[in-house]
Length: 146
Image 1 (cartoon, rainbow, N blue to C red):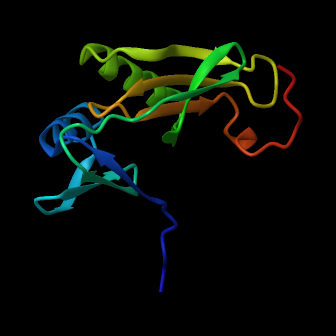
Image 2: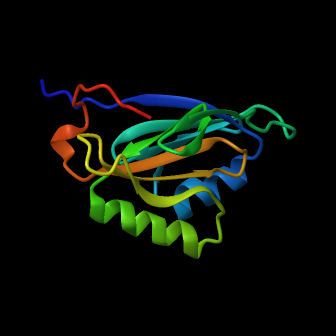
């Protein structure tokens, strides 16, 4: 038996219709199973599940400084290739979605050098998509000096 390793992430949303538009159309995730209270998607082969929790839900933000940016916490996302990163940044911009942190290169010259961008889904959930300039450094161990 061959198993594919993928993560599963379930998160709250205030509107399944808005989630469907965002995750299905803007991010290009393939929709899978659904009910009146939840819907799941494939995010590059990983299962994400939007759970409706009420019309008033919006994510509460906290922030942590990272390489000069105020990074919103909690957040979730993916490490992409550099080409995928720039394609997604273009789609997000064309959809009129406001970036919390504009696409840019951080940790320049360090093993963790990466492209990064942050934006929110319609329920205020924070998303980060990144692309390592050297993918083999995704898990490189070193002390980051801020």
